[in-house]
Length: 466
RNA sequence: GGCGAGGUAGCAGAAAGGCUAUGCAAGUGAUUGCAAAUCACUCUUAUGUCGGUUCGAAUCCGAUCCUCGCCUCCA
Image: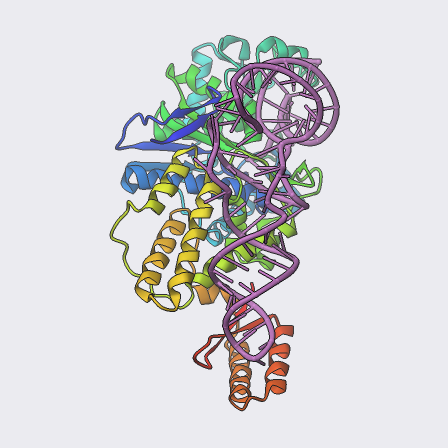
C-alpha cells in the first residue's frame, strides 16, 4: 500500500487515486534562461523515480505525468536583452540543454511538457474567469491582480494565515495593488517587451497563473499529485491553489509533494549566494549516473548536502555494483515477488524511500559475487534481479564495461593502446618477469587504469574508475 | 518576529519502542607472484544535551542548546 507524505495535511497518507486508470501528476519544472543546476537535477530525478514507481504500480498507460516549462518571465526577458537575442531563441536553446541533461540522468520524458507561451489562450481565459467571479481586478496601469482576501482558505498549504502574512509584510507596497498581499495575474507590457493581446491590453502572464492554467488544462480541474521544490510551497503553490480553486470551484490537487534542497556547506544552493554547480559542471567530471545515484542516497524530502567527497563516494558505490555485474549474463526474471522485490516495494511504498532500496542492491551484488566463480546459474539469477530492481529506480542501465571504462566516447586508439600494454604484460607474466609486469601495471595506473587479474587464466581486464 | 524541517558512528544516510541498516573511508584475515577485485570479519556499547515514561527509547513526553529553510524571484 503506497503511502505518500502530503504537504497539505502534513502527514503520510495512503495514496488513493481519483481514477485507478488515470493517475495524474503535475510538477513545476524549470524557468529556462540558464543551464540547469544540481537543484534542478534533484527535481528531475526525484519525480522521475516517483513517476516510474506509479507506472509500475498502476501500469504505464494509466499514468500521466506533466512537467511544465516556464518560458516567459522577467529573468528571461532580462537575459535575452543582455544577449541581444530573441527571447524565444534563448528559451529554445536552454530547453534543448535541459533535455540533454535529463537524458544524461536517465530521466524519462514526461507525457507532456506544456510551455507557458503556448498556453496564452487558457491563461487569459482563467484570468478572465477570476475577474468575472470577483477574485481578481484590473488596476489602472493595465496589471490584473488576484485579491487574496477574497479566497477564504488562503494559506492552507503553507500553514500561514493572512494576519501573519500582513504582520510580516516587508515588501514595498505597490500602488496599483489594493492590498499588499495581492499578486499579479497579468502584467502590462513595457515598451519593447514580448507581449500578448488580452482584454486588459498587451501584456504577459504572472508566473503563478501559468501553472494553474496549464495543469488544469492538461489534467483536469482536480488531479492526484502536484509536486515541485520546497521553496515553491509559498507563495507559488499557495497561489496556484487560490487561483485554480477560485476559478473552477473544485478542489485542485489532492496530494502536494515537495522535494528538499540541495545544499553546499549547509546553505541552500542558489544563484544569489554563488554556490551552485550546473549539471554540466558535474557530468564533465563524473558519469551522470553518479549524480543520479547521489541524489537517491537521501530521502527526497531531506536536505542533500553536495560535495565532491560525496560524489566520489557515490562513484565508488556504483563501481561496486557494476563490478558485480561485469561478465555475468542477464536473463529474464520470471518472478516479480522475490524477497528482494518485496523489500524494494515496501521501501518505495513508504513515501518513496530510495535510501532503503539501495541496500537491497548491495545484497544482490554480494550474492552475484559469491556465486560468480562456481555457480554461474545463481550468479545470472541474482545479476538479473539486480539489473531489474536497480532499473526500477533508473540505475544500472549502462553496460558494466562502459561505466567502468569511463564510457563517454573514449577513442578507440586509447583503448587499443591500453590493450596492447595489457598484452605485453600478459606475456611478461607468463615468463614470470614480475618486474616488467609491475612496470606496465604502474604505467597504466598512472593513466587511471587499474588492472584486475582473474585467476586460472591470464585474462586481464582494465577498469578505469570513472 | 511568524511558520516549518532537522541534529544518528570518520563521512553520507536509513530505521517510528526491543531484533546486524547500508554505502564510502580505515584496518585484519582468506585469496594473489605482488597487487587489484572478491569473500569473511573489525571499527560499530552512533543516536546534540539534561530529565521523565517504560521491563526496554534514535524512536514517546518535557526542558534546553544548535543548524537549516520559507515568509521576496528561486527546484
